[in-house]
Length: 179
Image (cartoon, rainbow, N blue to C red):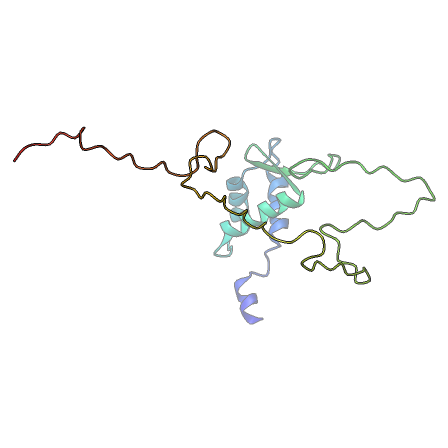
């Protein structure tokens, strides 16, 4: 309690009030910039708190956000009371069409997957009843095996699957150097 009274001079009004007084006193048609507002406040109220510039910036931004001040071309000016309220960024909301009298709204359906019904009959998915679960079993190998030329498993392009066998060279074609 005592520290607040020591830090804050008793004659100093609130910062929003100081800012409004400065803008009114400067009375510039294009508005007043931050430095001119700050200089006016410093000249009128001599002893200001240590963080005066920070406090001034904070309150100017806050007043700009709430719509008390309008920020245009780096100048602050009082908001026109007849001006329409400033809209936020993004797409404007769709206008709501009034419902005819007597129409009762049903509550909106919640998003996501609906919860399971606890009273629903349990469907068993035991093996042997209908379609089996999981990956189907491998087909049996052909009787001739993979080595038989006529029973090669092909993919439809006319070529057997897998890496082709290594071609053995005959000893006649090799060039041997005599020792």
